[in-house]
Picture 1: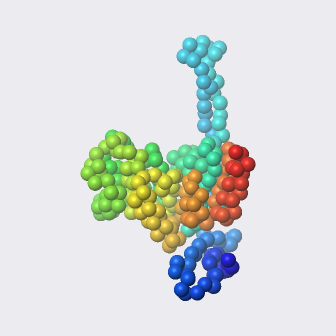
Picture 2: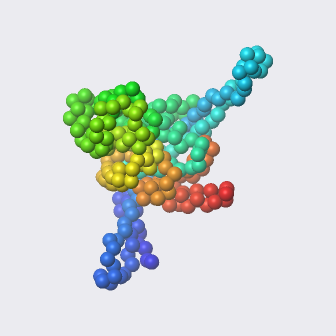
Picture 3: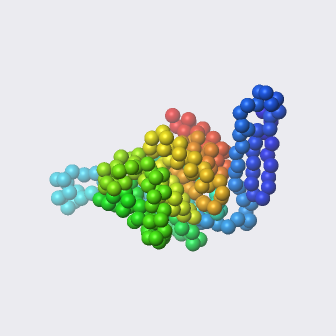
Length: 285
């Protein structure tokens, strides 16, 4: 199958140009757009310079040993992210992949401002940011409706703006009467619906997504995926997506960051990085 690559204004468009007759070519032609700006020609949205993040952990020990001064558990430092340095242009869609424990979610939370870097700097260049992640951002004793108001205000939106958009958020979430029940009664799928709906309506400059698109019923997955594609096609938003789904990263992302044991192993074109990651994981089996 012949392929043609066109380059224009930082865009690389790869499209299927195979010559088939009108009678046999009944399916729409697939087109994939990658936004790859030339160095020095873009406005940065996120800049990380030598960012390292460490946790303090305790060695496992018994209760009896804890009361013995000589056998108290020792503190150990675990480096979740080591020396992360990269810059993301405004409007770019970046995926983060890697095996469990590689530091993907930690990195995303650091960009969101939830975690502080032990070393290095993170610059969002004045952009507003939102994080979609299960278990992050909601007060579980409050209702879904109350959490919409709280989350919106934390994102920097006025109470008037949030209340105006409240009906759209509730409708998109499909939570029905559960919107007025405490979030602690929600399933992970319902939690995901509410989190995604807030960001889908109250759009920020930077959107950080941690596996949220893979949670929920089949109908909502399809709807949220379609909504996400629509939101990022206009290139007004900068998006970082943590996902174990190669299909999601290949279809949505311009660039992919591959993390391994806290280190950034590779950054580049989505297909190239994912191919390298898949080959690496096959070698690990």
